[in-house]
Amino acid sequence: MRLALSVMLLLSIAAPASAEDGTRVGAVSTTFRLVGRDDKVVVDRYDDPRVDGVSCYVSRAETGGVKGTLGLAMDPNRFSIACRATGPVSLKGNVPDNEVVFGEKMSAFFKEIRVSRMFDKEKQVLVYLVWSTFKVGTDGSAYNSVTAVPLNH
Image (tube, rainbow, N blue to C red; front, top):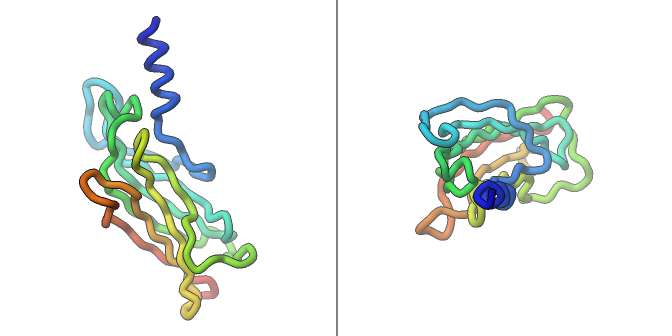
């Protein structure tokens, strides 16, 4: 009984948290794990809260096994992003030149995946960059992916 309560408490504290606006679109298993969940590639959708009509689709690796199931695994820095106009694109007020738009925990304590939006005023294009805040042994992660959505084209 104590073990079950400890595991439940650990799951509630350590499980990766979803971003408020994230929606799981789907997942595919990549590696079978005998114990715990399989390794996966997941795809989540995030709608830009300051720009109507733009949705970003982020794919990323999730580690399975016992550590992954308990939320203690460090997911690899492997991700991709594609943002698209999913309706008429319009800015909600003033949009900063550079802003973190979404963030999601990828480990219990240290790692977060982030999406930043940059505004290329000259070309009237919104540029979205996905990156992570932590990689073991370094100050950050150089792994990233970029996509762009034109405002008036």
